[in-house]
Amino acid sequence: MTTSTDTTPRHTSEAKRIIENVLRFVLPLGVSAWMLVWLFQRIDFAQMWQLITHGVDYWWLVLMMIITAMSHAIRGTRWGIQLAGVGVRPPLMTLWVSIFGAYSLNLLFSGVGEAWRVVYISRREHTPLATVVGTDVGDRLSDAAVIMLLLVLMLVVARSYVAEFLMRFPLGRDFVGFVSNPWLWITLVALAAGVWAMLHFFSGASIVVQFKKCCTRIWHGFAVLFTMKGKWEYLLLTFGIWTCYFMETYVSFQSMPATRALFTPELAYGFLPGLVCFVFCSVSMAIPSNGGLGPWNIAMVFGLTLFGVNITDATAFAMLMWSAQSLMLILLGLYSAAYISITNRRSKSSANGGRRSGR
Image 1 (cartoon, rainbow, N blue to C red):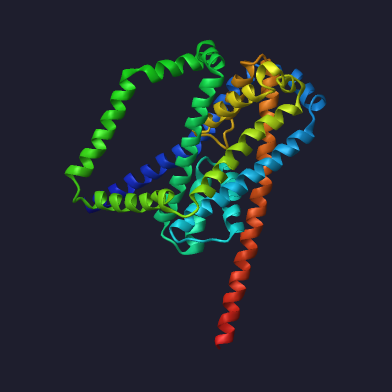
Image 2 (image 1 turned 90 degrees about the vertical axis):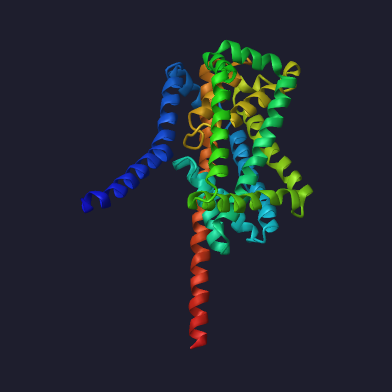
């Protein structure tokens, strides 16, 4: 009986670990694979290969890759303002490397990069992890606010194209049905009420106390957005990040004849299709996948087909742009690994030198 009692928690812990690994690693990989299979069933591979090998100006994609690197460097600089607000001041290059490494790791496993960057900064700067996590939450909530503003802008300037998407594609019709389903909102309200009841009526439970402490630290890291120095610099850098993101799409349009044809006065010289595709792709990143592979590509294809680009050309463009971005992230990830290795070696050498001096 003792053996049975002792092994039950072990079995529960093992099952929990398996479920977490499935949700973290297997689910995103499955989403990416399923969406790519769905997409590739609808295209002409021979035509797409001909287009990729003979109809692309790759210099525009090289420019897009440079803009990608700039966007991540700006994001690292912006994060530094938040971290400074809670008393953490890593070197600028360390901040850049934390972002470069995070995005490259997300290509392998969804969400791992975010976890890695907060752990990396926390350990390097000897700061409580929850405080760094709080600044990361603030960083992501800033992005969510920008996406909401972009959605509003898109609905104002490209409303007819969005309406066509929602009515033309089954995914759009399903989305409308999902959002308008009252059970969705009833469930969300019930979940919120359940969490409130647990925090209110079981406030003395150890797990609730620990949860509140963790939330307090995270809130402290997030609330620094409203009290930190450099708010205007933060806003300027936020504008810079999202301008770079938009320019990645806009510049890449010049790489292929089908997307280059979107630069007409009627389409505001590519601004309207660029905005619609950019917002669709930004929203798609909320779907768990490896570096956006699958959801991002489909979002780009849907956006382009709204403006008359055939599905084969749209798929070729989406795969090329995603691949070029991923190549840049891999290069930045290799640079990050080299930087961390060199700085760690120097730290150890300095520590050993200090010990020898002490002797």
